[in-house]
Image (cartoon, rainbow, N blue to C red):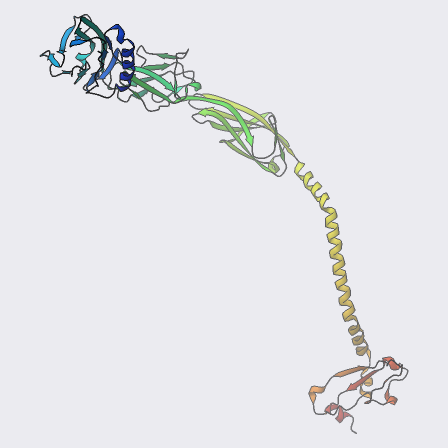
Length: 462
């Protein structure tokens, strides 16, 4: 008959291992008793329970099954913990409350786990049948405290100057045993280089001297067999620069270190460089082999119409007051009339359109004036003729209107006769033909009727 390991009554954490070991025992059942453990080293946490799973199997008739647990420390003799025959457990009275076993399951439970429980645990299984079969396994148990969150301290905390100062990063952990330290920069492990070195325990990173390339996000990863923790990100302060000094502008054409600006434009220059802390900037102008500072700050505005010379040399100087380093860049500004020439060309391109528009307006105005002249010219001629005739002629043509007492009828009336289609002139009925003006053409005779005025009757009584 055969027998397999019983189900674990204490924990379900070794279920995966039971399946693998069960297959192993079946494969070796024909050769006798087999004892297996999922791992020969198990890590435990102090103060918690630790379960040591054991599986065994055999393929012979058995009358008795004996299980024995022994404990040994380095350089000491194994010590009896507890044992069982079939389902009867015989513990050592010293450890009867610490170790538990439920036969025929050979697994052992240790609760609670202490540092003194660290060592090798030996399990031995004996099968009594037609003969006696024996097999054993050893499990190493380690006991550790979990790692607490580490903290990184940087010295000097105020920072270090590139190529001059050194920097030390120390990882501090309050709790945990068997600690392993690992330094990370931007999430990647830091290795030993010509400037990077580590302490024997690896809890200190020393950088000498610091450079700009050492800037980054540093963290300390601490782990042990039962846990791991990573510190918060820290960025050490490193003073460097200036590097890559350059001048740019918002207008103009840049070719190398020469800026070409149209006359009349105001151009804004910007000076920048990579540096920490930020640089202080000075602008210098060169004129007639002399130099003088014209402004401080990263920006300079040049009004081209106010520049006396068409070609002017400038210098932008950047200075880092912590590193004590400075850099400068030279550039030339050339004032040209390219803009005016473009404007003139633009005016030439628009001249045909302007000419057409001017001619059209002239023609329209001329037509309007001609129409007005034609409309008012006949009235002007008639008025001039009337004003040039003597008053006596008006008196000769007097007639009575029938409204002698009506002062509102006073005025000068003109009648013009036009020939009929037959060519015979018509004469007005109110004026006899003998009173018409001699020598005047009937087609253009003007008959005047002057209203009777009482005052005139007194001067000429009937």
